[in-house]
Length: 171
Image 1 (tube, helix red, strand yellow):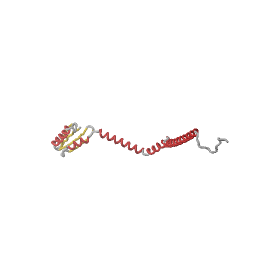
Image 2 (cartoon, rainbow, N blue to C red):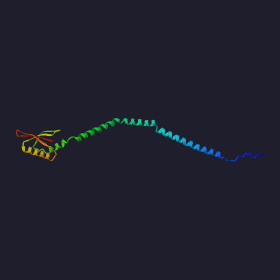
Image 3 (cartoon, one colour):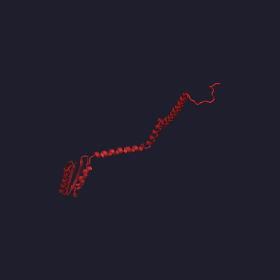
């Protein structure tokens, strides 16, 4: 009889089979990792692709173009306001000087002509009393001394039928 014939198989694995099983397990794990990373990369590429970003940009441009006319008007209005405020801050403050001069006019003195121009304030006042005109002129000269006005010049003093007329220029 032969000893080598054995109908019952004993479960003994050889080292070759063990290595083959380890390689199969490692290959399945690597296959799973590669498949999972491929799906993740596909989703990232789909979400952040150039076409997707262009579509988002076009949508944003379309929504902003609807407000473009309003924003242009607001921009122009702001520019005009800043220009006007710059002009107002640069121009001379004649109204302050005119207010100071008008405050000094006595009630018996009548203003016949009052002009404000680049040269300053030109005025023509009249009164029945020369003393009142003198007091008014002294008040204006006091404003000049206090540096409210930079100068006062007398253009003329005339008399016509009980009325004295004083012409002066204040700068």
